Image (cartoon, rainbow, N blue to C red; front, side, top):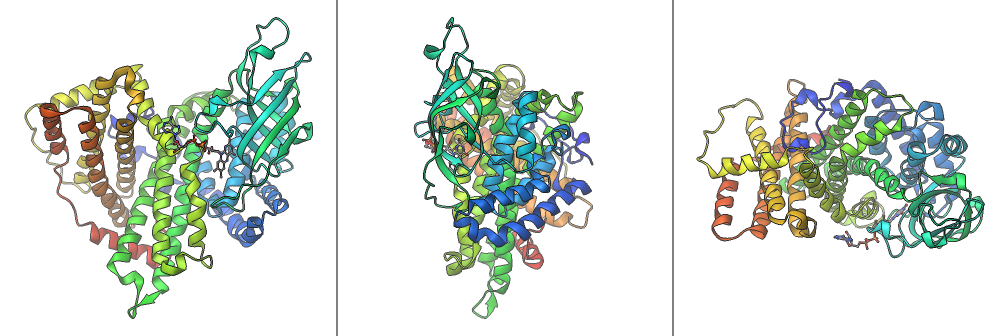
Length: 600
Ligand SMILES: Cc1cc2nc3c(=O)[nH]c(=O)nc-3n(C[C@H](O)[C@H](O)[C@H](O)COP(=O)(O)OP(=O)(O)OC[C@H]3O[C@@H](n4cnc5c(N)ncnc54)[C@H](O)[C@@H]3O)c2cc1C
């Protein structure tokens, strides 16, 4: 199936609609071209990056630059860029494949991500023809390395609160002053996308020129830009992170990126792209670690037997696989939706507005990919250390490095708190605007749950019980979100505790739905049983987590008889019998051990 035949849902609509397995993109539907790209990146990382990781960790930035050039020769820096600018013009599924494979070397993945996703991408999306001609070929060949300067010492999550200033000069150029913080590739980059505020009080002339948060393309060669000292980080030691100090950096007018006062558009759109790719990187990192844990468990013997034969270790391996499966399922589904939407909208190859609109449409799913992926990976990497025992805690094995490298994924590209708040926030805004029928669905649901119980549906086909559970997870999410919107109205954004519970429910639901649809799509194949084991394990446990979040959210919003009535309705939704997940997890663990790898 090509992505063009994916059924197109609106962003967030998965809560309202039951999709068919045949209409969802899954990793099993990758084309030969996608698989070839994946193999190219895997070979590059295994053959050229991992063998020199120690030198990268010693901060040999000449080597980092050389690796960017090698990746560029393979075409990896311009996967999303139109062919006319030297890119490969690939679909978003391909960029997910690249991100997944790149993750095997987290430090270089950060270098790559900052260059390709945070500099090449905004230039290709928002740059003028002249800017693209001047910079894209040099970035895509690796002649120039890019860095993205949004954060400052006083403004991280609150990125629009930046203090860096851009002062317009009589000749139309700008003078940039300020300090940027935690800039990936900061120590050696040549080209910077820098956000600063054009201050109206400094505008020359009539005073009517636009002002505000603005993006600029800045060459190190312009002068006045210096890199501060390398940060001593917990992980990612092979990636440069420095402050960037701006002292009267003169930026010509033609290096304004986008429009004055519209920098937020660039920053937010870049984040939408970066988030599902980061989710994919986390998915790939977890898959690699599952292979390490499975291989170690097969060879490490205690009490006269391989530790992989112990139920406690099989439980761990099985759970790691089930969670990675759900994450991978939701990320490919999201990329497939974006591609399908782009393909369904007639446009010229050079018209980036269609791509931007498609990625923005699935901003909710992109935030889920980022949060769910990064937390799943931290769980998997923590368990990887535990499976390795003492060897997991020392540097002789990579488990220790992965654990340190991974932690930052919950902090950058919007912290997981900020992304959690965005998920229900965007759903509520789209519902209020009428773009999503959430309000009507939530009202109908309240009536259903307050009315007499309906007869259970008699479907007993494979995975039918799981389909009912996922449908009920959607209902529970709608119940909590609907009640929150009704209770707090305009004050909803201030109710962070409730929003976070609702976000958790929505994320678990999207993951469970995506895993189940993928298992449904695998029905009849040789691996169908294994897919079903992963999906059933995940769905069973997700239901418990969704119910727990729902109980807490409801109890925060209502009390007394109203709460009792709501909890009774909730109980009706989650009355399914628990299944024997021990057997299913063993099946997943044994497959991972037999293959010495993540088994999907
Ligand atoms: C290794 C590394 C590489 C990085 N690379 C780059 C880069 O290349 N370019 C770049 O521009 N930046 C980069 N960053 C910066 C990164 O994007 C920020 O660290 C991140 O956005 C968080 O900002 P902060 O650190 O100021 O945390 P803060 O915003 O101070 O947040 C601190 C805590 O408060 C919470 N919080 C903040 N606001 C709210 C709110 N409204 N509601 C609820 N909770 C809230 C956060 O979730 C977090 O838990 C990098 C950071 C690191 C560590």
